[in-house]
Amino acid sequence: MTSHFSHQRQLPGYRALRKGRVSCPGMAYLLTSVTRNRRPVFSEFSVACAAARCFNDRLLLRDSCMLAWVLMPDHAHWLIQLGESDDLSSLVNRLKSASSRMAGKICSAGGRLWMPGFHDSGIRSEKALMAAARYIVANPLRAGLVNRVGDYPFWDVMWL
Image (cartoon, rainbow, N blue to C red; front, side):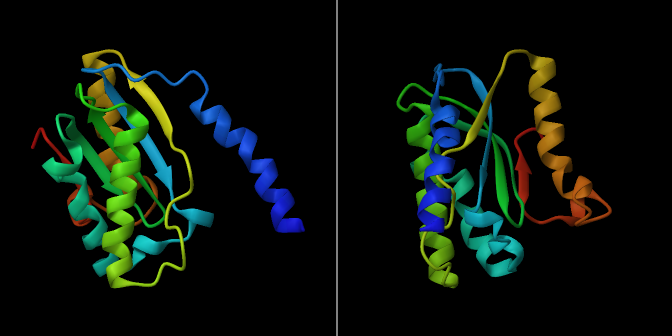
């Protein structure tokens, strides 16, 4: 009964994430998704490698462009320029599904890997785009996982 109640309490927040979401082709978005119960599934190197391979996969991205990404132990950030063929939800669902399948081949994640939904923020200027990319790349530093950005293996940015 308690778990059913807490699931019901989470639904309005999940719905609020989708409320007012607009997918504009050609626009860049900073996207964040967390693992179920914030489990640090990607702390295991081989699991993180398997999931990270999906983030630059042209078949998954279709005509969207991955500008930057980081895979943290319990969440991921993506900076994506949206193409014409997808809305944000379809693209993120494809990335999450593929990374779940790949990670699941390495470990038993025990059901769904990612929480439903995601957070998105539209990037409206070149300055904001560079700030978002720096934010993504520096995430492992801020989390205390490494002392230098280059020491963390699970990130990429197209400007390097």
